[in-house]
Length: 88
Image (cartoon, rainbow, N blue to C red; front, side, top):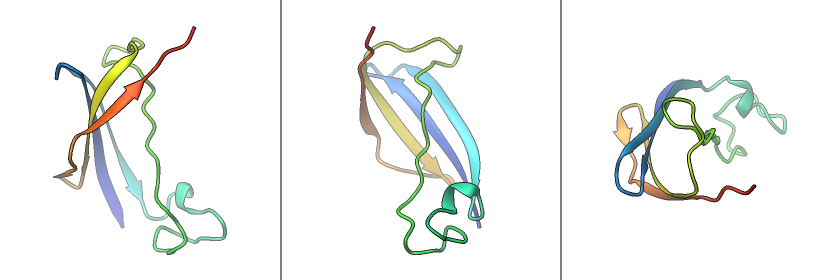
């Protein structure tokens, strides 16, 4: 079992910021926790895909609200609002 995923980020005005893509396999190490063999183990709650808080050119993005669109196997989720606060 494998899933193709894509995360797309837009700023609060709807301007494209960055997208990330990849493939997650059911046998990936991320699912092998607490004795689980793969992703079919019912004790696994899910996986987390981290954004590095950089734009498409590799520059750090500023504090503010961002819109996140998650697509897995060509099925899009509802857009989600994500807040980012930078500290010095």
